[in-house]
Image (cartoon, rainbow, N blue to C red; front, side, top):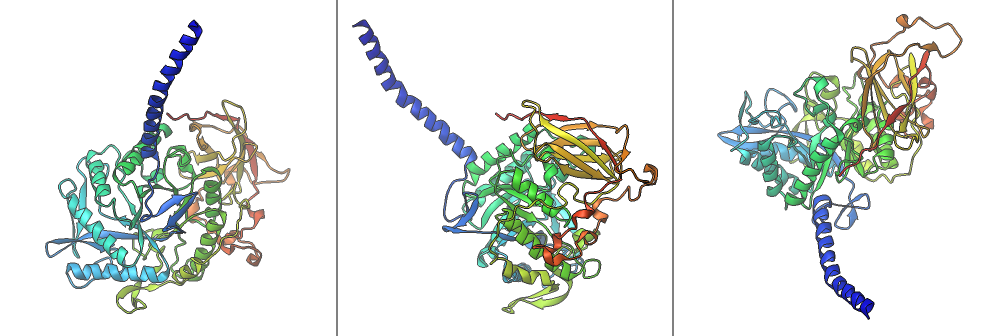
Length: 554
């Protein structure tokens, strides 16, 4: 009887405590969902099963990057096109009025819509510097640029963005809004929260981009050697942004613009809690390999946020650019991209060829939109006419390893081999990223490990500085002096001191010499590279096995 009495008391206790525990578990689950889950609202772009949806139909963002300034006209502030578009000495609208400035934007967006783009990545060139203790806003006129404090003048920026969104709405164009990352700056953080709250009910904004290329711009106010950030610290920062989004903009999506696979050294896209990954990739020799790596090893939905082949119709022809946009669009969609973005709308004069001529609109001449509502400064490049055709492209699955995956830039003097393994299991790590630098840090190259954890790092100069990591694993930095390089073949080779092209780096490497003699046999002509030009070296050596430890996140 005593046992029955004890059992009865246990049952009674469980009846009381189990519902209570269930409530606690449900509450905890809700808190996690609020922190890490994008809320559903069919008025907004949704992300489900690795694809974007809008009103129950798949939405494939075909995006162009468009830059803007804040312009002061007759004591009024207004959004305006980037002053560097067209004639950089003045804004395009000759009439110094707010309405004229907005008319220019309407003309540009009408042309963007006519090209076939359904999304704009809005790049506000407002001069806000996150490293300043008191960040300021740059205000432009035709003849000058001045600065005013951001704090207390947030409404000027909010109103300018709202003007742009209203115009985008009128053309049924969605917007990805690039932010100044709120890192260790209370003014920027408060500004960001205010912005998210103001536009949380605007379906026009389908996503916020919280950081443009942390690889290049994180801690860019510091000397190069002091810029490193621990992966766990980056994860905590991004988790805070995610929570900020869910509290203040719960229906919009959240991303970061990742520059290239070596982002994995610090801002590891595989572990950061973004809704989707946005990839920026440019040089034709690099694009197939970089996209292949992101698709295979990051394990998150991804889009191209920026790509282009600069073309001035001289050094690189408009025909080359036209072929490029077709190939990169189709290749990326075939291997798994769920969106595409082009950098940028119009050519500029920033001093660097790669920046100057990446637009779909040249700077000289004038054109009219098809409806002839607006006259626009510039001349349309042929690549722009491909967009309306590409939006109809039906992907065909393609998972072939790029022929230059392990030697993207065709270096041919040295090859260094090694192996990367898991420090806990001693198993090979596939997809680890290895970067080497020359002694003076001027030239670098990357490669990846294969299924056996083996890497082959090709270079034209001897590397002595190294950095290695893999998705979800720690990062190791070290110096290593190769004791001896030996000839790859038993044949006469030039002495190491006489090897050519030791200072050659990718900005000065053209992709055309690596193309196959018959590009008609390839699906993507821009990436139809001759395999024989990537798997050769004069000298070889080995490095000891590197162990990486897994990262455990709280």
